[in-house]
Image (cartoon, rainbow, N blue to C red; front, side, top):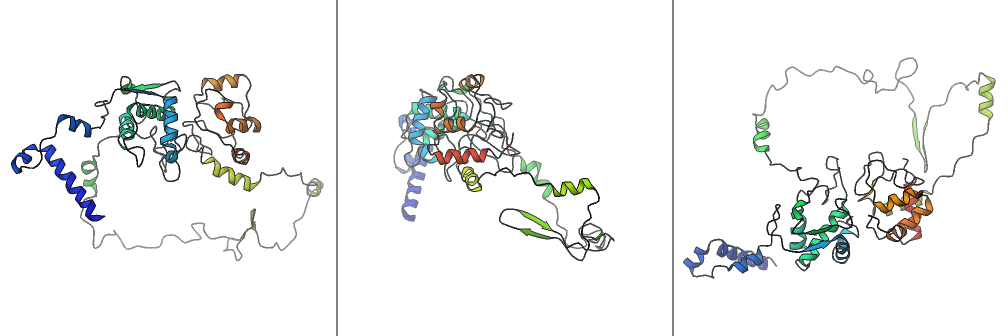
Length: 372
Protein backbone atom coordinates (compact mmCIF):
# COMPACT_ATOMS: atom_id res chain seq x y z
CA UNK A 1 0.00 0.00 0.00
CA UNK A 2 2.86 2.34 0.88
CA UNK A 3 4.61 1.62 -2.43
CA UNK A 4 1.40 2.28 -4.34
CA UNK A 5 0.93 5.61 -2.52
CA UNK A 6 4.51 6.64 -3.30
CA UNK A 7 4.01 5.71 -6.94
CA UNK A 8 0.85 7.81 -7.11
CA UNK A 9 2.60 10.77 -5.49
CA UNK A 10 5.46 10.57 -7.97
CA UNK A 11 3.06 10.26 -10.89
CA UNK A 12 1.04 13.30 -9.79
CA UNK A 13 4.21 15.30 -9.13
CA UNK A 14 5.55 14.46 -12.59
CA UNK A 15 2.25 15.42 -14.22
CA UNK A 16 2.13 18.68 -12.28
CA UNK A 17 5.68 19.51 -13.35
CA UNK A 18 4.85 18.93 -16.99
CA UNK A 19 1.79 21.15 -16.76
CA UNK A 20 3.45 23.96 -14.84
CA UNK A 21 6.77 24.03 -16.64
CA UNK A 22 6.39 22.75 -20.23
CA UNK A 23 10.06 23.56 -20.86
CA UNK A 24 11.04 20.55 -18.75
CA UNK A 25 9.12 18.26 -21.08
CA UNK A 26 10.89 19.67 -24.10
CA UNK A 27 14.29 19.45 -22.44
CA UNK A 28 13.93 15.91 -21.17
CA UNK A 29 11.77 14.58 -23.96
CA UNK A 30 9.00 13.52 -21.54
CA UNK A 31 5.29 13.94 -22.20
CA UNK A 32 3.84 17.02 -23.85
CA UNK A 33 2.23 20.32 -22.93
CA UNK A 34 -1.34 19.93 -21.67
CA UNK A 35 -4.10 21.05 -23.99
CA UNK A 36 -6.37 23.89 -22.83
CA UNK A 37 -9.28 21.43 -22.74
CA UNK A 38 -7.32 19.12 -20.45
CA UNK A 39 -6.42 21.94 -18.09
CA UNK A 40 -10.05 23.07 -18.00
CA UNK A 41 -11.20 19.55 -17.11
CA UNK A 42 -8.92 19.49 -14.07
CA UNK A 43 -9.34 23.11 -13.03
CA UNK A 44 -12.81 22.91 -11.46
CA UNK A 45 -12.22 25.38 -8.60
CA UNK A 46 -14.66 28.26 -8.06
CA UNK A 47 -13.42 31.52 -6.57
CA UNK A 48 -15.22 33.80 -4.07
CA UNK A 49 -16.07 36.32 -6.78
CA UNK A 50 -17.91 33.63 -8.75
CA UNK A 51 -15.15 33.10 -11.27
CA UNK A 52 -15.28 29.70 -13.04
CA UNK A 53 -18.86 29.01 -12.02
CA UNK A 54 -20.63 26.70 -14.43
CA UNK A 55 -23.87 27.80 -16.03
CA UNK A 56 -26.88 26.30 -14.35
CA UNK A 57 -29.49 26.69 -11.62
CA UNK A 58 -31.29 24.81 -8.86
CA UNK A 59 -34.15 25.50 -6.43
CA UNK A 60 -34.62 24.67 -2.75
CA UNK A 61 -37.24 21.95 -3.31
CA UNK A 62 -35.03 20.07 -5.77
CA UNK A 63 -32.07 20.54 -3.45
CA UNK A 64 -34.00 18.93 -0.60
CA UNK A 65 -34.67 15.85 -2.73
CA UNK A 66 -31.08 15.54 -3.95
CA UNK A 67 -29.71 16.20 -0.46
CA UNK A 68 -31.96 13.48 0.96
CA UNK A 69 -30.73 10.99 -1.62
CA UNK A 70 -27.04 11.91 -1.74
CA UNK A 71 -26.10 13.63 1.54
CA UNK A 72 -28.56 12.78 4.33
CA UNK A 73 -26.93 9.44 5.14
CA UNK A 74 -24.03 11.38 6.67
CA UNK A 75 -25.34 14.88 7.31
CA UNK A 76 -28.94 14.10 8.37
CA UNK A 77 -32.20 14.84 6.60
CA UNK A 78 -32.09 18.50 7.56
CA UNK A 79 -28.31 19.01 7.69
CA UNK A 80 -28.12 18.38 11.45
CA UNK A 81 -25.16 15.99 11.14
CA UNK A 82 -25.10 12.31 12.09
CA UNK A 83 -22.57 10.58 14.34
CA UNK A 84 -19.17 12.18 13.66
CA UNK A 85 -20.20 13.70 10.33
CA UNK A 86 -20.36 17.51 10.45
CA UNK A 87 -23.49 19.54 11.03
CA UNK A 88 -24.19 21.93 8.15
CA UNK A 89 -27.04 24.06 9.53
CA UNK A 90 -27.57 26.15 12.66
CA UNK A 91 -24.99 27.59 15.03
CA UNK A 92 -26.00 31.19 14.36
CA UNK A 93 -24.23 33.51 16.80
CA UNK A 94 -22.27 30.69 18.47
CA UNK A 95 -18.74 31.47 17.25
CA UNK A 96 -17.85 33.30 20.47
CA UNK A 97 -19.16 30.46 22.65
CA UNK A 98 -16.74 28.05 24.38
CA UNK A 99 -17.95 25.35 21.99
CA UNK A 100 -18.93 27.10 18.74
CA UNK A 101 -21.08 25.33 16.16
CA UNK A 102 -19.31 25.86 12.84
CA UNK A 103 -21.72 25.37 9.94
CA UNK A 104 -22.32 26.67 6.44
CA UNK A 105 -24.48 29.44 7.87
CA UNK A 106 -22.50 30.37 10.97
CA UNK A 107 -18.88 29.98 9.87
CA UNK A 108 -18.26 29.66 6.12
CA UNK A 109 -17.42 33.10 4.69
CA UNK A 110 -18.05 32.49 0.98
CA UNK A 111 -20.86 30.71 -0.85
CA UNK A 112 -18.34 29.68 -3.50
CA UNK A 113 -16.73 27.39 -0.90
CA UNK A 114 -20.01 25.50 -0.54
CA UNK A 115 -20.57 25.13 -4.27
CA UNK A 116 -16.95 24.23 -5.00
CA UNK A 117 -16.67 21.64 -2.23
CA UNK A 118 -19.97 19.93 -3.06
CA UNK A 119 -19.20 19.81 -6.77
CA UNK A 120 -15.57 18.76 -6.33
CA UNK A 121 -15.67 16.29 -3.42
CA UNK A 122 -19.20 15.12 -2.61
CA UNK A 123 -20.78 12.72 -2.00
CA UNK A 124 -18.15 10.89 0.01
CA UNK A 125 -16.83 7.97 -1.98
CA UNK A 126 -18.47 9.12 -5.21
CA UNK A 127 -16.99 12.55 -5.82
CA UNK A 128 -17.99 14.56 -8.90
CA UNK A 129 -21.06 12.42 -9.63
CA UNK A 130 -23.43 15.32 -8.81
CA UNK A 131 -24.39 17.43 -11.81
CA UNK A 132 -23.96 21.19 -12.03
CA UNK A 133 -27.69 21.87 -11.60
CA UNK A 134 -27.87 19.46 -8.64
CA UNK A 135 -24.94 21.30 -7.05
CA UNK A 136 -26.83 24.60 -7.36
CA UNK A 137 -29.91 22.93 -5.86
CA UNK A 138 -28.02 21.46 -2.88
CA UNK A 139 -26.37 24.83 -2.24
CA UNK A 140 -29.78 26.52 -2.32
CA UNK A 141 -31.15 23.94 0.13
CA UNK A 142 -28.24 24.54 2.54
CA UNK A 143 -28.90 28.29 2.38
CA UNK A 144 -32.55 27.59 3.20
CA UNK A 145 -31.65 25.19 6.02
CA UNK A 146 -29.63 28.00 7.59
CA UNK A 147 -32.51 30.48 7.29
CA UNK A 148 -30.73 32.62 4.69
CA UNK A 149 -33.28 32.31 1.85
CA UNK A 150 -36.97 31.51 1.47
CA UNK A 151 -38.35 28.16 0.32
CA UNK A 152 -39.02 29.42 -3.22
CA UNK A 153 -35.43 30.56 -3.80
CA UNK A 154 -33.64 29.57 -7.02
CA UNK A 155 -29.83 29.81 -7.13
CA UNK A 156 -27.98 30.20 -10.42
CA UNK A 157 -24.70 31.47 -11.80
CA UNK A 158 -26.47 34.80 -12.50
CA UNK A 159 -27.52 35.62 -8.89
CA UNK A 160 -24.76 33.64 -7.13
CA UNK A 161 -22.65 36.62 -6.07
CA UNK A 162 -25.69 38.42 -4.65
CA UNK A 163 -25.76 36.01 -1.70
CA UNK A 164 -23.65 37.36 1.17
CA UNK A 165 -22.81 34.88 3.92
CA UNK A 166 -23.26 36.01 7.58
CA UNK A 167 -19.59 35.43 8.41
CA UNK A 168 -18.20 37.07 5.25
CA UNK A 169 -16.28 39.62 7.34
CA UNK A 170 -15.29 37.21 10.07
CA UNK A 171 -11.87 36.30 8.68
CA UNK A 172 -8.70 38.42 8.59
CA UNK A 173 -4.99 37.86 7.84
CA UNK A 174 -2.98 36.11 10.55
CA UNK A 175 -0.67 38.88 11.85
CA UNK A 176 0.49 37.15 15.03
CA UNK A 177 4.12 36.97 13.87
CA UNK A 178 4.32 40.78 13.98
CA UNK A 179 1.58 41.70 16.45
CA UNK A 180 2.01 39.11 19.20
CA UNK A 181 5.15 37.00 18.90
CA UNK A 182 7.62 39.82 19.76
CA UNK A 183 5.94 40.23 23.15
CA UNK A 184 6.81 36.66 24.07
CA UNK A 185 10.39 36.68 22.84
CA UNK A 186 12.26 37.70 25.99
CA UNK A 187 15.23 36.27 27.82
CA UNK A 188 14.01 33.81 30.49
CA UNK A 189 14.82 34.54 34.14
CA UNK A 190 16.95 31.79 35.64
CA UNK A 191 18.15 33.18 39.02
CA UNK A 192 16.87 35.69 41.62
CA UNK A 193 13.62 36.11 39.74
CA UNK A 194 11.41 37.07 42.73
CA UNK A 195 11.71 40.58 44.14
CA UNK A 196 11.85 39.21 47.72
CA UNK A 197 11.71 35.97 49.64
CA UNK A 198 8.21 34.44 49.74
CA UNK A 199 6.29 34.68 53.00
CA UNK A 200 2.94 33.45 54.34
CA UNK A 201 0.41 36.27 54.52
CA UNK A 202 -2.91 34.49 55.17
CA UNK A 203 -4.18 31.48 57.09
CA UNK A 204 -7.10 29.29 56.11
CA UNK A 205 -9.22 30.68 58.96
CA UNK A 206 -8.64 34.24 57.73
CA UNK A 207 -9.66 33.25 54.21
CA UNK A 208 -12.92 31.86 55.64
CA UNK A 209 -12.39 28.37 54.31
CA UNK A 210 -12.34 26.78 57.76
CA UNK A 211 -15.80 26.08 59.30
CA UNK A 212 -16.24 27.93 62.61
CA UNK A 213 -18.54 27.27 65.57
CA UNK A 214 -20.68 30.07 67.21
CA UNK A 215 -17.75 30.95 69.52
CA UNK A 216 -15.51 31.75 66.58
CA UNK A 217 -13.40 28.61 66.94
CA UNK A 218 -12.84 25.92 64.31
CA UNK A 219 -15.84 23.62 64.31
CA UNK A 220 -15.21 20.14 65.60
CA UNK A 221 -17.90 18.44 63.56
CA UNK A 222 -18.57 19.13 59.91
CA UNK A 223 -21.90 18.74 58.10
CA UNK A 224 -22.20 15.48 56.22
CA UNK A 225 -23.42 15.43 52.62
CA UNK A 226 -25.68 12.44 52.06
CA UNK A 227 -26.49 11.66 48.43
CA UNK A 228 -29.39 9.35 47.78
CA UNK A 229 -30.94 7.98 44.58
CA UNK A 230 -33.22 10.95 44.07
CA UNK A 231 -32.17 13.90 46.25
CA UNK A 232 -29.19 15.25 48.14
CA UNK A 233 -29.44 16.66 51.65
CA UNK A 234 -27.04 18.17 54.18
CA UNK A 235 -27.29 16.47 57.58
CA UNK A 236 -26.13 18.70 60.43
CA UNK A 237 -24.73 17.34 63.72
CA UNK A 238 -27.38 16.48 66.30
CA UNK A 239 -28.50 19.48 68.38
CA UNK A 240 -27.95 19.39 72.13
CA UNK A 241 -31.41 20.74 72.81
CA UNK A 242 -34.74 20.23 71.06
CA UNK A 243 -36.01 23.27 69.15
CA UNK A 244 -38.68 25.26 70.98
CA UNK A 245 -41.84 26.45 69.18
CA UNK A 246 -42.56 29.78 70.78
CA UNK A 247 -45.95 30.77 69.37
CA UNK A 248 -49.36 29.25 68.78
CA UNK A 249 -49.10 30.23 65.10
CA UNK A 250 -45.81 28.38 64.70
CA UNK A 251 -47.31 25.34 66.42
CA UNK A 252 -50.30 25.27 64.05
CA UNK A 253 -48.01 25.67 61.05
CA UNK A 254 -45.89 22.80 62.27
CA UNK A 255 -48.95 20.61 62.74
CA UNK A 256 -50.58 21.57 59.41
CA UNK A 257 -50.61 18.73 56.87
CA UNK A 258 -48.23 19.15 53.95
CA UNK A 259 -49.75 20.13 50.61
CA UNK A 260 -49.93 17.27 48.13
CA UNK A 261 -46.96 17.19 45.78
CA UNK A 262 -47.46 17.50 42.03
CA UNK A 263 -46.48 14.31 40.29
CA UNK A 264 -43.12 14.73 38.62
CA UNK A 265 -42.46 13.68 35.05
CA UNK A 266 -40.96 10.26 34.53
CA UNK A 267 -37.14 10.73 34.66
CA UNK A 268 -36.67 7.88 32.19
CA UNK A 269 -39.05 9.54 29.74
CA UNK A 270 -37.21 12.86 30.06
CA UNK A 271 -33.87 11.15 29.52
CA UNK A 272 -35.23 9.47 26.40
CA UNK A 273 -36.54 12.85 25.22
CA UNK A 274 -33.13 14.44 25.68
CA UNK A 275 -31.66 11.78 23.42
CA UNK A 276 -34.36 12.28 20.77
CA UNK A 277 -33.88 16.06 20.93
CA UNK A 278 -30.36 15.67 19.53
CA UNK A 279 -32.11 15.39 16.15
CA UNK A 280 -33.48 18.89 16.72
CA UNK A 281 -30.51 20.56 18.42
CA UNK A 282 -28.85 21.71 15.21
CA UNK A 283 -31.64 24.22 14.66
CA UNK A 284 -33.38 24.61 18.06
CA UNK A 285 -31.82 25.45 21.42
CA UNK A 286 -33.06 25.13 25.02
CA UNK A 287 -31.68 26.25 28.37
CA UNK A 288 -30.59 29.46 30.06
CA UNK A 289 -28.13 30.49 27.32
CA UNK A 290 -30.34 29.46 24.39
CA UNK A 291 -30.63 31.82 21.42
CA UNK A 292 -32.66 31.80 18.23
CA UNK A 293 -30.87 30.11 15.35
CA UNK A 294 -32.17 28.42 12.24
CA UNK A 295 -35.20 27.62 14.37
CA UNK A 296 -36.61 29.48 17.38
CA UNK A 297 -35.66 28.87 21.00
CA UNK A 298 -37.92 26.19 22.50
CA UNK A 299 -37.90 27.29 26.14
CA UNK A 300 -41.51 27.29 27.34
CA UNK A 301 -42.81 25.91 24.04
CA UNK A 302 -45.24 23.48 25.67
CA UNK A 303 -48.47 25.42 26.13
CA UNK A 304 -47.17 28.54 24.34
CA UNK A 305 -49.08 30.39 21.64
CA UNK A 306 -47.54 29.69 18.24
CA UNK A 307 -45.32 32.35 16.67
CA UNK A 308 -44.64 34.17 19.94
CA UNK A 309 -40.86 33.86 20.35
CA UNK A 310 -39.49 37.39 20.23
CA UNK A 311 -36.91 38.17 17.57
CA UNK A 312 -37.51 35.13 15.35
CA UNK A 313 -38.76 35.47 11.77
CA UNK A 314 -41.49 32.86 11.35
CA UNK A 315 -42.79 31.56 8.04
CA UNK A 316 -46.03 32.90 6.61
CA UNK A 317 -47.87 29.55 7.02
CA UNK A 318 -47.00 29.42 10.72
CA UNK A 319 -48.08 33.00 11.34
CA UNK A 320 -51.35 32.29 9.59
CA UNK A 321 -52.03 29.37 11.94
CA UNK A 322 -50.89 31.48 14.89
CA UNK A 323 -53.45 34.14 14.01
CA UNK A 324 -56.00 31.35 13.90
CA UNK A 325 -55.26 30.56 17.56
CA UNK A 326 -52.74 27.71 17.32
CA UNK A 327 -51.31 26.81 20.72
CA UNK A 328 -48.48 24.33 21.11
CA UNK A 329 -50.17 21.98 23.55
CA UNK A 330 -49.22 18.30 23.73
CA UNK A 331 -51.64 17.30 20.97
CA UNK A 332 -50.57 20.03 18.54
CA UNK A 333 -46.88 19.39 19.18
CA UNK A 334 -47.31 15.66 18.67
CA UNK A 335 -49.15 16.16 15.37
CA UNK A 336 -46.57 18.64 14.12
CA UNK A 337 -43.59 16.50 15.14
CA UNK A 338 -45.10 13.45 13.48
CA UNK A 339 -45.46 15.13 10.07
CA UNK A 340 -44.41 18.81 9.96
CA UNK A 341 -45.26 19.34 6.31
CA UNK A 342 -48.56 17.53 6.62
CA UNK A 343 -49.55 19.54 9.69
CA UNK A 344 -48.43 22.88 8.24
CA UNK A 345 -48.16 23.11 4.47
CA UNK A 346 -45.29 25.38 3.49
CA UNK A 347 -43.45 25.14 6.82
CA UNK A 348 -39.79 26.14 6.75
CA UNK A 349 -38.87 23.15 8.90
CA UNK A 350 -37.29 20.52 6.67
CA UNK A 351 -37.34 17.71 9.25
CA UNK A 352 -39.24 14.66 8.02
CA UNK A 353 -40.85 14.01 11.42
CA UNK A 354 -40.83 11.58 14.35
CA UNK A 355 -42.96 8.58 13.42
CA UNK A 356 -42.72 6.87 16.82
CA UNK A 357 -45.40 7.77 19.41
CA UNK A 358 -42.85 7.06 22.16
CA UNK A 359 -40.27 9.42 20.67
CA UNK A 360 -42.79 12.26 20.39
CA UNK A 361 -44.02 11.79 23.94
CA UNK A 362 -40.45 11.69 25.22
CA UNK A 363 -39.28 14.86 23.47
CA UNK A 364 -42.40 16.76 24.60
CA UNK A 365 -41.76 15.68 28.20
CA UNK A 366 -38.15 16.86 27.84
CA UNK A 367 -39.18 20.25 26.43
CA UNK A 368 -41.75 20.70 29.20
CA UNK A 369 -38.89 20.97 31.66
CA UNK A 370 -37.67 24.27 30.16
CA UNK A 371 -39.59 27.33 31.24
CA UNK A 372 -40.18 30.38 29.06
